[in-house]
Length: 347
Image 1 (tube, rainbow, N blue to C red):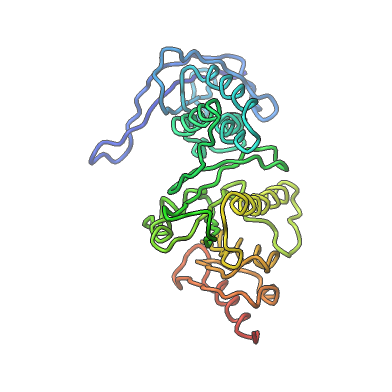
Image 2 (image 1 turned 180 degrees about the horizontal axis):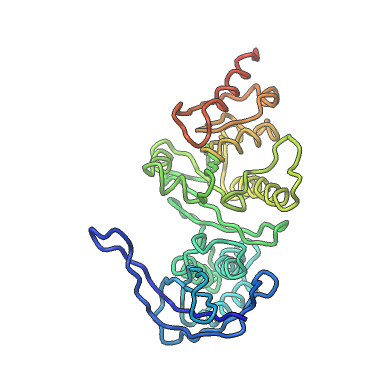
């Protein structure tokens, strides 16, 4: 049997330093009886961290054979005091909330549990911000108010994706001149691989919400179930791997559910619903356009690729295709093949 040694640490890089320095915040103890095959026999450890301040840390565990270190692993963690009480309070509030607001209260609880089970990365949960937003939603529900009624600007919303039994986030921009008395255009924006629903809001120079405010249209950006969801199989054959197939199906469902929710909550011009995407999002946009061609007024594709044989399905949709010819990740040949296939069609 092996042993393990655990500690909470933080890393920081000083100006001019070639490597980060490690500061030990707390030694968490040594543990005996660790199996030599941790895949077959995972080893559970309980840590006392009551005297450590709230915040983000790294949990480092070293595995040792006597005094010789065989290897180590580092896991990002967040510590927050009183979390059990907060979760209990939010769960009670969610039970009393109307169905349309229940997911707004439960989102950080659901996401935290998925992170703790290893199903999601910690970076997909902002502990302080997401729990604060859920507490605010719970307070509004208690006061019999809808916290989103009449609000414009940058909004984060949530709903239950029933097929996955998981609360999903999506981000909205509603221009300040929005009024339910007239229909507004809608842009559905699909992020690239590894990004989230925040991508089109916080990256790309933050231009998309700025333009939405200037031009008067609504933006809705779904997560697509996972950062690598891929937005479904499109009209092609589903993935052979059942895990990939489930992930892809849920990714497509997330996009379509967000579209349905926005159409339900806002007055949308049904003739001006647009689909845009970058990289994996552009690939997903061509998939979804081929599957639901009657929904979209136009497509905006950036650095994607597709299946040229599917362009007949959305031949009537105007498209704006952009791709740099030095792209090292997604070859420009993919976009060029789609454009050439579209040029052969007479509309």
